[in-house]
Length: 452
Image (cartoon, rainbow, N blue to C red; front, side, top):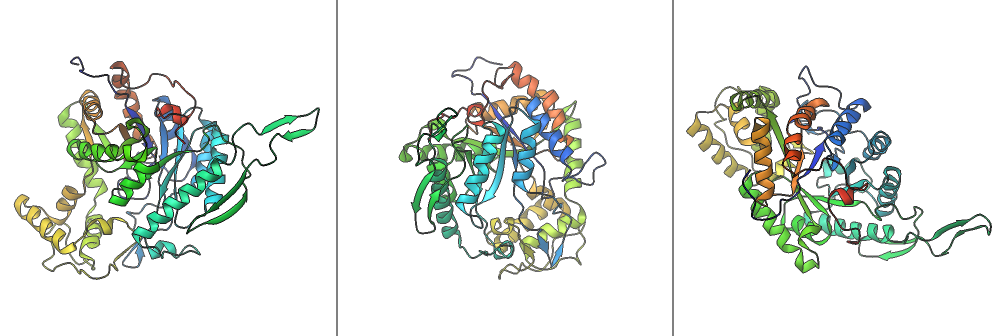
């Protein structure tokens, strides 16, 4: 490696337990259960063995549907977050435990109590990925329903987080004296008292979980909208982002980090962590061959049609996935085909997306399936262990991110090869820890203890 002109950044790494989407190749002979606890244990222990910062669980509140039916690209899984993370706290020692919990259908007291409890049980390793839930279909599962437009969702999320922080801060940490001789347990009779009023929340009382090792969990945010970026800059400790290419990553990194100062925060108080995949081979050619095979496993002919329907907003089951794109235009009306998928909103103008798809398919002579593979590929590091380690290090040292959340395509053993072949190189180069320096997730991420 050439001599750096500035101090090397330490690369933060995390593991995403594969779940509800077609990234997970559940039909591969080497794939295991999405629900069996042994699967969670295997991935968590692999991540901890490689000295990762944390394990990340996403959220799936309802089985998604397409044309009124459950389709198997949405793998059945996602058991309760707190149950899984609490169990993992007992079989790991240092690994951070990050759970996604939405602010639309929950209440601050309940969520704050659960995360404070997890932080106690894990010895200071809890993290909360704060998300909003956007659709009425998912909301049908809940009393509150899916009634909030986007601006109202973020307004509620901001108030939700503010209320939770009031609850976390209702204990200073020195109230419990537990003097057996005098019989005095609490040194401050006001411990846990809170009184919080905002447009969304009008709560008062006593918080019943004493101050946890981190004071409050590390706060994550996932989202790329203007409101999401500002929400993260104002109060999050880390962002789970989709910007996996170096060019896009550097733009996002500079934009969000540049917002911190006006919220009274410093450059290091927010970590940016794109979610990425990886494929390793003994040679570049072998890795590319494996990657191509995995993409065709992830996008079967049926899955290609289903993903295309999410743009066209109409039943395309009569079309051949190995044939050309439909000669009809998408239905630009209210989306009725796919239910519960946030990705349908990312397509924006479906007519414009269809025009772009047709241009790509025509230029590259692609079938429906080949096109979907082309346009739905997420950022992936593909190559030999050394070339992947080099690319990851270059990405971080170039301020494209502070590290990555790795999403293996197999459960639960998909991370093993990365831990065994890529991590040792990063450790040898001095850009990834060989031992945990601290015990809490806040310490793993290099976040100051007094940033809240």
